[in-house]
Image (cartoon, rainbow, N blue to C red; front, side):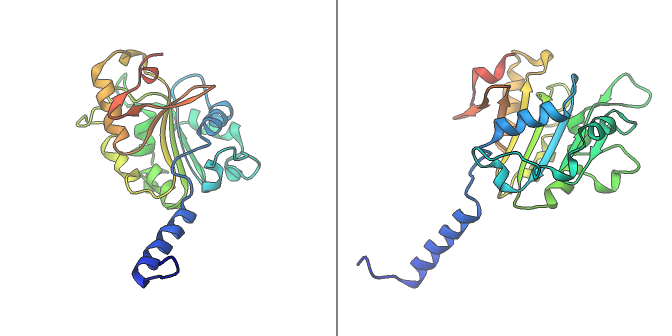
Length: 234
């Protein structure tokens, strides 16, 4: 029987094999190197967020982040200057970034995640809103990483029904075929120890895998619907 091939069986097996070839990476295997590169090159001391959509090969394990990685977004000073400018946003070809922006007439800010995932609050960039969706559309099969220095806060960003919640917007990642990750570096200090924070992280992980990445390791934060302790405290 080993030499017998029924059309439907062979067709299904071939389809699975081709799908495997098209999407060999089940996750972002090069995540630690990518996050270190982004943080060291484009990062600032206070809160900021970045999104990338790059060819899948850069997310394979041990892939070199050479001159072909973010080649059109290589000017780190421009990225930082734009994030420090009036819009508080950088929009590039494979990279977007934002820092918090003050809400006019208040002491509060539009958070960096909100500016990238929902509304840029910019007259010049609003036609591209949501900026992250526009970036995803540029390569539907690319490897995408959304990185925020501090974890999304319970008060504003990560509570599902909140006015400025990013949870509904994360549905843009739901059907992505390429590798994807939602990453934070440290827990927002006001959320340490809050049960609501853990619940919100589980909600995000149901849509896109959540990782905590520090200088030396990246940890998947949710396992069997439980948030790992290494992700909970600074």
